[in-house]
Image (cartoon, rainbow, N blue to C red; front, side, top):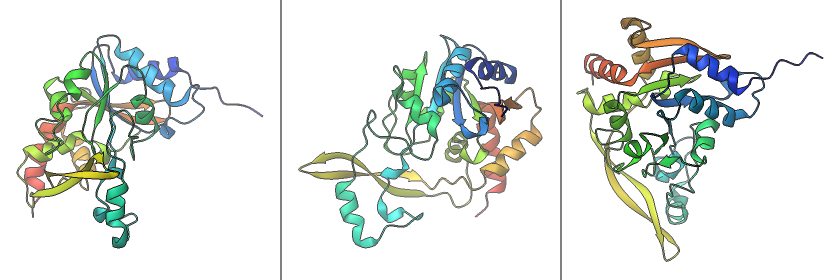
Length: 270
């Protein structure tokens, strides 16, 4: 039986450099461990170490640490919760804790990164981000409860820092930076919504806090990403390449957001 050569930290690091990841970058990573294929020696930990090795001491690694399981049960759809259970779920739901609450629906690499020594997590109960490196405190501090992916969010701080986005086997539908564009653009059907999140427990009962946000939606993010690549010159705004078997895009976040603002205003019509 022939065993495929294991994938090492050095293999991943070499591919990241070839793609264009450089020391000192501030890098937001959306990832799929499975997309790399083969046997990775060290699994998710090896991918994180490779990213940090390439970014170096002056770089900053950022990942989503979203916790969608902490949303109100009345909004659940896949599967829905029986209305008879809604209040029981609200009363029993463990409140958000930056150190304790696990991530959900973002993959094993962000969940592993969350637990690494030196990683800082922002305080939003639904859409927190984690960061490690030179700009980690700047990115994760003061994450507002309302308008959580807008102009006072970690996404906006990444924009101001000239960050890059790496989609490591991840599709544009998962590109959270396009949500920042939703706040900045004027598009048909945009409106404010009232939401809630579990904040703390008192007297054996979880207390929820109401906050406000826009009705952001990722259904057309794949279209935005395809248009961005079609209209921007590869090698300037973005590069495509492989990290092992993972199809990747490395892009300047600011260019992607600015492009998405214009696209949304021209194409999202109520």
